[in-house]
Length: 297
Image 1 (tube, rainbow, N blue to C red):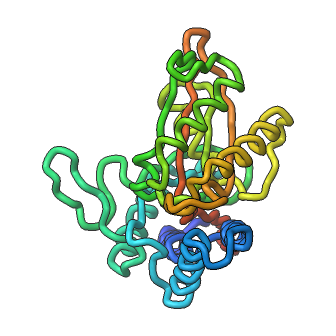
Image 2 (tube, helix red, strand yellow; image 1 turned 180 degrees about the horizontal axis):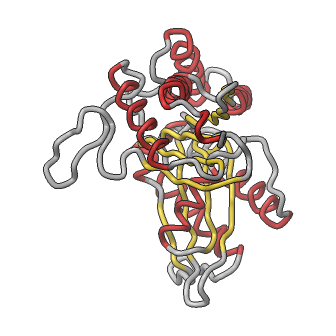
């Protein structure tokens, strides 16, 4: 029997509902660790320390009460890897049904609004909502990566086209460095700092931003496999945190928790730097699903 025949739609939908619940109500351990370390680095009793303490208490209450970490439960962004022969339509249907049920259970706030009429669909589904990217792989399992990306941090995401004469930024990594610092300075406390920056170098305007968002699935404490990018990530994080913007823009040593960079081939005529800003509520989780077992990471 083909592997795709053994996948049951109802079981998959239930597993996806649990994925949404965990993503919305439980922050990843590496993010909590980074925020905890940031609080220890701030002066005791300072506004920055108090803000980070409030964030940590909010994270714990959300986990205990099984309620969303933030009132803005964000855009539902999925990256799905499927075994050969698995129907994308089946999985998309399961995701949409799980999204509707998650909204009914208040794991998600109704966020899908028609831009022409202003009408809310009421269940987080609509045109390109949820947003799903499918790829095929050789494994006999389904992997679903979910990100809930808030509107505030999405509003301060930005894209640059190099060269940029106003920044004296050329088509090189030094130019990339200048654009990222400029983006953080422009954002200030908006976007709910301390943030995590996903950066895509290259591609076109759409693939570059998709690449930038994909970086946000990386662990806060991982290291880029490319030595040049690893060095740039470390340099940017250090210099961003020296700006003094701090948590929520109140000042302090922690403006960013991490900087993650990826690259894509580009046309000779274009050099885009796409910056996807994620707030401290870096809600991401991965589900590995087979008919025999489901795990969440």
